[in-house]
Length: 191
Image (tube, one colour):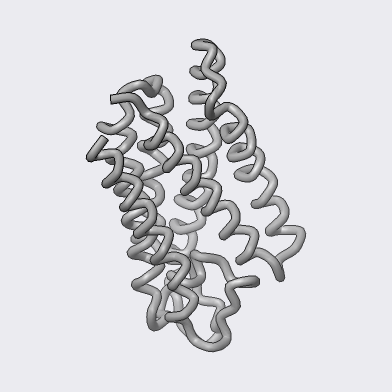
C-alpha cells in the first residue's frame, strides 16, 4: 500500500506541474487554446515545468506497470509501459513553439508528434485490455471508468482538430482523465 501511495503522490506531482506550467509561459500563451505540449515547446522560456510534468508522469506509469499492479494482464502491462515510455519521449522531444519568431527543429517536432500519437494509442489499447480482463473475471469496479477513459482518448483528439481554439482545455480534460484512471488503478489494486 505504501508504494501505491507514492505512485498516487507522483501522479499528483506531475499533474500539478502541468497545471502550473501555463503560469510559467509568456503572456501570449492561453491555457484554453494552447496545449500542454506547447507549454513544453522548443525554445520557450519556462517550458521546463511542463517537461518535468511529462517526465514524472511517464516514469510513474512505467514504474506502476512494471511493479505496482501485479494483477494486470501482461498485455496491459506492456501497453501501459509503452505509454509511459512514449510520455518520457514526449518530454524529451518538444513540439514547435506557437510563437512564430522562435526557431525550432522540425525533426524534434515530428518526433514529438509521433510519440504523442503512439502514447494515445497505447493508452486506449491498454485500457481496452484492462476492460477485457475485468469483464473476464466479473469485476465491475472500474469498467465504467475504462469506457469513459477510452471514449475521452478517442473523442477529444478529434474535437481538438474541429475546435482548435479550445484545444488546450480539451487536452487538459484528456490528461485529467488519464490521471484519474491511473490513480484509481493504484488505489483499487490489491497487495
